[in-house]
Length: 115
Image 1 (cartoon, rainbow, N blue to C red):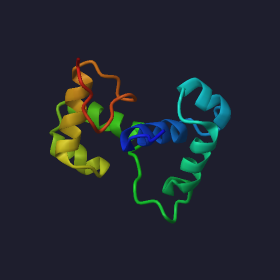
Image 2 (image 1 turned 90 degrees about the horizontal axis):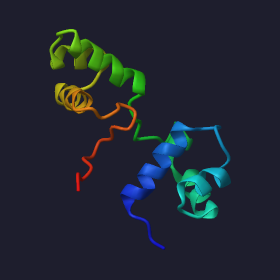
Image 3 (image 1 turned 30 degrees about the horizontal axis):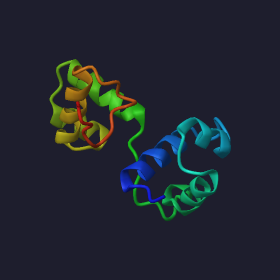
């Protein structure tokens, strides 16, 4: 079965965020896809496994929370973003998502359909 880029990215993001919490076999059983062999291959080929090759680095949750805290205290998005090393539009997007009731840990860079 062919998996979409989004499914692969989501599975890998979740796996790397839970590093060491469970085995690959248990993780795949809990997630329901892909096979354990396929997941191991994705992990092996992912650049986050080797920091020297990594081009994609997810912002830590604490950085996101710090930006939201600063904005909620009245700081501008530009100033909060500059302190955390991210753009003002990123901070505004995260703050809006959090204000809308989306948990920051589950908030991703793409919009989910509401249907």
